[in-house]
Amino acid sequence: MMNRTLSIRKKEPARHRFSMSTFRGLQAPELSKKMSRLIKQENSAISAHEAAGRERVNIAAQLSEWGEGTDDDAVSDISDKLGVLMAEIGEQEDNFAQSLEDYRSLLKQIRDTESSVQPSRDQRAKIADDIQRLKLKGDQSKDKVDVLEQELVRAEANNLVAEAQLTNVTRQKLKEAFDIHLAAVIERGEKQILLARHARRLLNYLDDTPIVPGDARQAYEHADAAKQILEAAENDLKSWESTVEPIHTSAGETTGAGRDQEGQGESGLTGAAGNANETGTDGAKQDQPQVSGATGTQPVAVPY
Picture 1: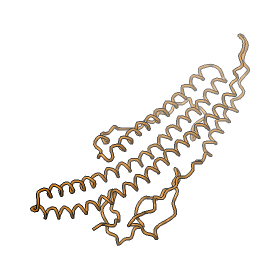
Picture 2 (picture 1 turned 30 degrees about the vertical axis):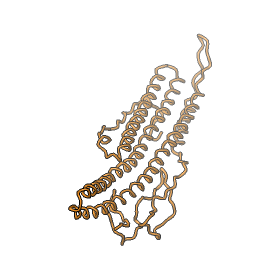
Picture 3 (picture 1 turned 45 degrees about the vertical axis):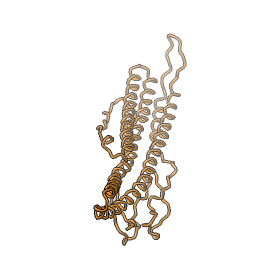
Picture 4 (picture 1 turned 180 degrees about the vertical axis):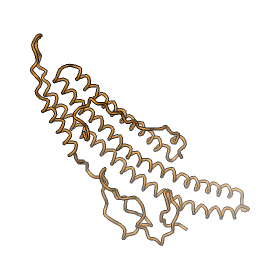
């Protein structure tokens, strides 16, 4: 209800979301194809939520305009104020869609990491195949085999870092993404329930006592009370606070050969309005060998 007047009869221009279909899912490496399809489908779902929100706002405006044309003061006032609350319910759908965009951007980080790991897997497999092919040729290829075996050790080390980074990013970002998603579901639900409860209060001011032909209805005297309901709804929205339970995370810790015992800390918390610890190996010792991994240079215990 923020920045909204107490009437819905002046239409506001609908907001349109720019979107473009892509062939990324078809062109993606095998490792990231499934996540690419999920991300594309989420984009369609987000567009549907935004479209539903716009339709709700338009329907609310039509409800108000219809009531104005009934020449019934009570129906006109109640329908207008119902329109305000129903439009705000539609706005919550749009806010939900915006949160889904944040959730979707985190899924993209998983997809991008999967895509970056695929070349290291392919390189390791190619070198291993070349070694087997040369060994079948006999002793004349021994020197080439020795060179390739050294390359294979380096490729396996690179892949080891990439695979570790993949599992770290996957777990961290999946947790962060659905933290945002589910918190947004709860927020949308709680706010829409709040608005619906106030809208139901308005209905009590509409006298539906039957009259006989020729009788006149009593004058409508609840305009001020109905206005107070809108103000109460607006105040409730302003004072709404999230009550979701925070999600625990240990993303700032590292394990394995590169773990720095002094850098270990307590498990953190991540929430829709909180700060999450970043996945990484910042606590690793500086004198360890560095090998290029899936998402950057990472310390690793190199097996050679």
